[in-house]
Image (cartoon, rainbow, N blue to C red; front, side):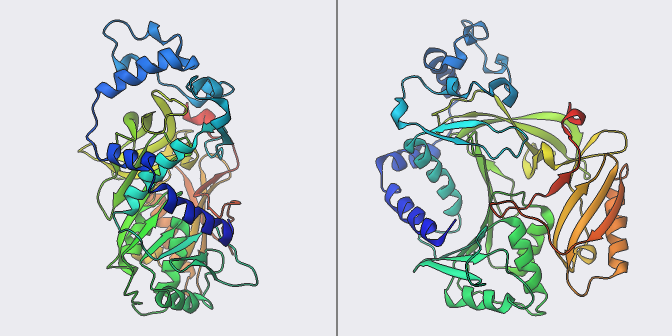
Length: 421
């Protein structure tokens, strides 16, 4: 996205934040969720959304929400238009596609009102840091003429996530300090690279105006979170989670569990029977959208997975099916490794790569201090976590990014879907 596009988007957000639709949405998000709302949604969908015309067979006189079927993307592919409320005029609908990160791309229908409501939810996460902040965006931006940054307006700059190196890190430091940046909005992978190069300066860099860091769009792993807390000790960390389909949304502040706003989207956590290396349960998010209801999804399996602790609190977002590894017994394992500080130091980027089931190559981008002893330590710690996978570590020059500047955390050379059934 160009600086002009960012500027227009910023101005649009400022305008819509004063609209009645935004104000009502903000009020709804602040209200406690009433489960009677689920009854109303189902009854409304049966009457007005063509996809649910046959749902009365699940919804008798005393219909129970839990009795409704859980939908998968394969159930609605090719039928997306039937999920739109028939009372919405066609001229107001905006058509788009999902990114297909789960392996299936859906056609999405949206309205300006739903988009404004989504802005309200995202702003609730940003407001944990503050309002009217001086922003720096560190995401998929590549400025011309080998520049590291571009000014959008007096309160917003774009920093390139592609050009952070040992030679340019001081320019990033100066830009953030001179612009008095109060909030850094970053992809987690870009934040990792920034933190690593800041760490390699050998001194604690002070950003006197920085109030917080907002991450989104990628999995925010525990290793990156801990590193960011160490490099930016005075900044509040907020990780925002959502989807293109706007099924549900959540955010976590610092080391607190994720808070799913049930007034935005009602969420259920369906146990998969799998656990993380530390014994926590893995569950899939099943969601029913509430606030952004152009397309009505009822009990939709999102292909997003979370880690639940003993108190059933969401302590981490694991990601999508594509973020799982397959072991030598053809069983899926959550792609979560826990590294020591010694093993994780001197890395500026990483990716899990599986050429075939039972084998893992941990690709790493390193600095000049990385050595063979550290590579062996990484292999040891990976093998302790993934005991049924043969692990190796490969040093690479860079981790490829998508067109949007994101980085795939796990890459497979084979279709993993048959192993997840």
